[in-house]
Length: 335
Image (cartoon, rainbow, N blue to C red; front, top):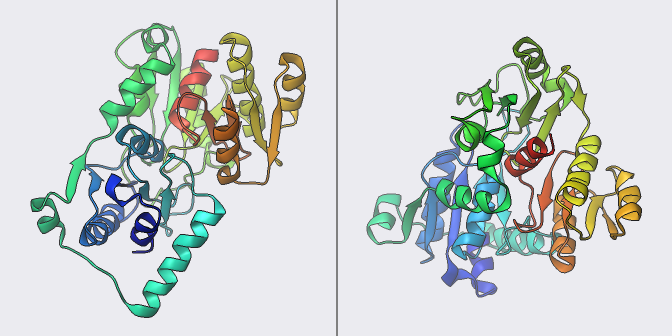
């Protein structure tokens, strides 16, 4: 209800709201409940038909011209968690001032009890809820950013670990069927995330490391629970830090693709970007921790890339938001 009130306050309600969810326990039920409240306030809802990566939902906002999105996900956190993410009309993480307005609205609703809700079946019949599969929209856009036909012909063997999360199957779908070989592990839905926490850091990627060595693969790629972050394992089974990956992705964009533009980093990520900025004569901006601080600068400066220490990277021409799938594809193209 707090989000609904925010959309009305900002004149965004007529654009509708996308609602998506991850593979966690009851996420689809929380998403349905969210849709019922939004529809109960007369706002059109585009409800995802299946567990969907957060970057696809964020891109859906841009593609559909929606007023924003709600994602039911706890991202990389332990299995006992779930969460509620809000994405702005710019397909970005909500900045602090937007969060504050929604929180204020929610507090007021708690005090007054003014929640409107329409049962999902009725909302669908009334045309207030429309089911949507964002895969085709996203796939079509990705083909404009990277030459997938060429990448599919690369004689590479990769191991993908979606960590039981929303990224299951996406690399196989985008790359499979040609010369490149894609092996996927932890690829079934399991809300308990057995034996791991769905965060792509070294401590959680022992199985990926072992599989890369056993399969004699060229690289291992892990995405977190909602697929907006990545972790990389090299051909020797060694973990590349998120700082190393960020520097390599920046080098790929600047040197291999020949692009130029500002780069945005959080204070806790690699200082190598300053060196790259000097070499390629592009500005580098530094922000506090959190992609919500990176996104406004990416938009204002039409920045080439933005990244944070947790493995989340966003790219120009896409959206001012993290995307672990596109980051993984770019990393493969670098190889």
